[in-house]
Length: 176
Image (cartoon, rainbow, N blue to C red; front, side):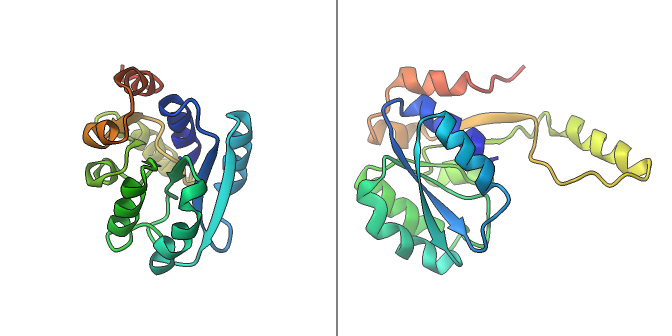
């Protein structure tokens, strides 16, 4: 859920103003709610259109110096094993934190932080979906409700993110 990653960015980067987001074309359904959340959090959202994974780094490069952070889209056609490494090398070298990603493995790879599915609590949500299916109802696709914050401590130190900010970010989505 990209909006949760914006909240995470605000907690870790309280002075940040401009967040770049790679936006697949055509515009995805998550973009309008992301714009609303960006306004609520007082972020300027710099929407960077991309068509595929090959264009992601190329599109970001000329805009990077104007960004306080980058938000990765929840789209494997744009961000995947081929595009992630060059994006992360570029952003870390420029000192620009990156947020988001589909799983905690993105954080392991060098994303500063992401709100990811909490695999331990995911079965409860899956049971609800299965119950709907057995009643003949096809539920709409949803993001995981059970989430946790994943932070790459090495990247946080490299970028000079204070330990207090990391603690504040982790407290956004506490585990029961």
